[in-house]
Amino acid sequence: MDPRIERITKAADFISSRLGGRKPLAGIVLGSGLGKLADRIENPVVIPYREIPGFPESTAIGHKGNFIGGELGGRFIVAMQGRFHYYEGYPMELVTLPIRVMKVLGIGYLFVSNAAGGVNFDYRIGDLMIIRDHINLLPNPLIGKNMEEFGPRFPDMTRPYDPELIRRAELIASDLGLFVRKGVYLAGTGPSYETPAEYKYFRLIGADAVGMSTIPEVIVARHCGIPVFGMSVITNEAHDDYADDYVNDGDDVVRAADAAADRMTEIFTRMVAGL
Image (cartoon, helix red, strand yellow):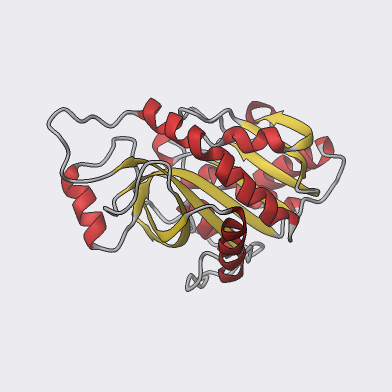
């Protein structure tokens, strides 16, 4: 057996046994400072990543490192309370391992979230941005021998973020009276924050927000044929016209994400409830 498939299968079997064999409707990946959604999950089964065979550990700020199963919006789901990043030194196979594990568990949808810098001059700290498309500056996670069991060699990425899920999110936000933006997310490797010249470049090539995650998971989900919805919380203004004493700070990013997490949680909960 392909050792990659063996790793996925062992992890999925372990998690399934802890969840009583229940099939989740959706999987949710919670980014920096956004783990509060996990507090809304009812009857949770919490599995630390360190207990799951083959799983790495999350070392990023604001990532608790738990795999959770339970009810959200009356539907059984699984959630990652913290993700894995390329900048942590993990290969893309491990960064995206949980997505394929969730596929084996039976998810029909993937929801991803992240904290991001707003390179669009109109964006403000605390804004929510529905991701409508992305620009990938990370290594593609599908490089290498294709896992035919999960998807085709050359998957289509014309609509990486599901249009129907985006429409639902916009309607829900409108019903709740919440202002949301819709834009393009760009991901680089990190872990250093970008320079002002890089922010300017990203804006010129069409990005609205910038981060260090999410896209590898989306690519793997689309390879598996899973519809994806993504949302960024704008946690800092990623501009090229800073004051002389401005400094990007990781703790500030987590605090800003935490402050916006309740609004994102309400949108995600209502979306899951309506599936």
